[in-house]
Length: 136
Length: 398
Figure: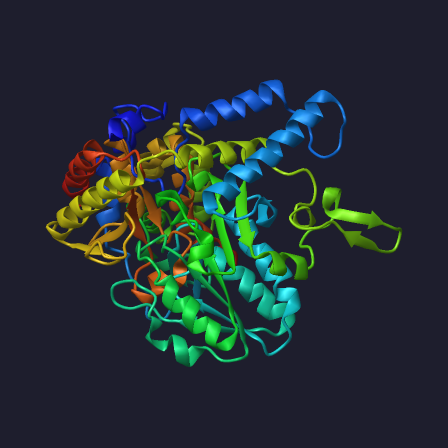
């Protein structure tokens, strides 16, 4: 049932404001929209010359799931190298396919979303916005 | 009365509060039975074969057109079956648009559904047509105070929603028709949200075009209606080509069948049209004064309850005057999709998002709203479930 989506871990992620808001001087930035609902996510990062993400900021106009995914993304990549984003993408793909895997980490909280086709893009949007940033 | 109506909709079980009829209304047995009867006894293509199934299908398709026409008070020859309301609006934008010249203008409003914006934007881009817009007032009504100043001889068409799919506001059609007539502009109404709420007398409305979709008037998906005055159908070139829309085809050129066939290229949505005909026959038998009173009372319950809920902002008229039972709202600190998801767990079906009206939401500085929409089968149990669900939303999200 829908209630399962709004469990404590998801709500806690959505309320995690540590990386909420734009960075003052990002090295890379990108915004993506979900045309179906009008939600919008902007991802800013400040990247070191060795590819490490020094800081990440997200600005989310979206639902609880979208906000939670943005927080999970920030937690997954800050202070880490470029491989961390690819790992986050893989983990989310597994989770949204309903695969419970020890490597899912923070993304495991999103497992209940796998049963709600109409909400998959809510969770994906922060990573869609982040992808050009990490591929730049 | 409502229980008797509700019992005709097999999908409406006691555990479901279906408040998303503005997106798709449910189908009564009269429609389901008509579609099943056609598909199991008369299924064939129309206007092509001479075998008995083809004859039966052709007759049933023609009868459906007559049923729709009778419900709307117009001749069957003025009814064009389309694939939906969007297709009907696109047809007018293409075919009436083909009669316009660069510098001509179309007047729209800021509350239109994307289906009554995008086709005109496409026409403007390819044909040099100017688009003009009426604003929306604080209550979510089209502001007609600027109507006279927006209209001049260059405006060939005024295309507006009869009822807003977001705010529920009902257009003052008489004012629009009278003012448009002063400059010779034609009037098209997007009737998608008006058609489900009672009979329409199109001739009395005085408009030139009327469009709506079948699935919003208790009929199947995949069929819609464009009504237009005969002289306009005759003057307009076809939209799509092929199938039975022709009179004669040569290798390099063709001539067209008379309307409405001219606008029905390819195999039409036959079963869906027969369902729509059945829906119109059924709608024509209903006690509309009672239904309207019930819809209004339930709408008032929604408005009153939302007004008493902290943090709620209703996007639309607060009174029932010139208002259809479509109620959109924002709850501060929440997102419409989260509201709808939790409401679903309480057995309440709502719609969340921009409702294909992004400019309207931008006008009110909102990305989206949550919409509860009523239909002739709505009852108090739906409203009770709505407010129980809203309490649950507030408990989880706030």
